[in-house]
Image 1 (cartoon, rainbow, N blue to C red):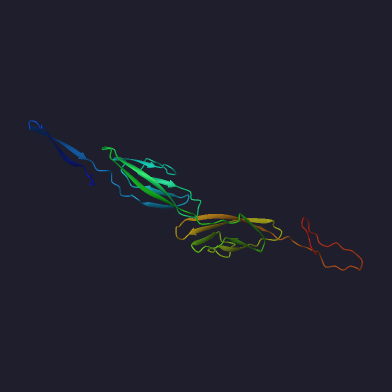
Image 2 (cartoon, one colour):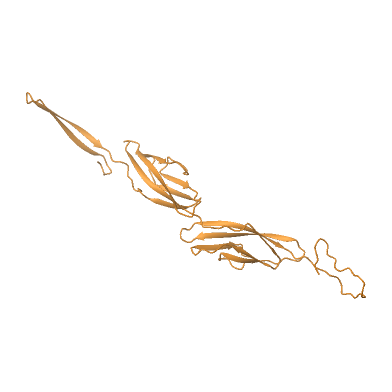
Length: 238
């Protein structure tokens, strides 16, 4: 077994003896023991967030060695020393995948089988209601339940009560009778431990208040009738 970085030569002697005549002869053969390709990353684990890129492998020397990754699932190239992986993790637990790299010396044919791991961190939970609706000057509550290990970032913050809480108040004022507006609000949730993050979006519709006009003050006689208001397209309540 050659554990060095260079070839080792051993001389083997064969002696052949004739047991009847007691005559003998000797011959020698030199055996060169080439080293296996070096393995400096055995057992290493590279962590990445679900759906994000990570890399496994070593800097490598393509002139000296050839490489083959197995399995070749979710990696960019299975014949390079450093492979890029993108793996989805739909759970809320760490998912680990084992990869093996067969490293072959192009000159000697000697091989080394290297085992490494890709650790796929889950994304934080971020599940906003897709839409919210409110009247001008009213308040809508946006957000999700707070988790201690998560950080929260809302944007834009123009009509929000806070930027860095799990739940925020949205309040917007628009002119009466001006129809409606739609604002796109994004919440980015960041896992403080893994650094993984996930964005979600809510579309907030702010409806204008109708313009109520009951007309001028007036007086009528008992038993007479009068028409009040002049709104068109809305329902008035008195």
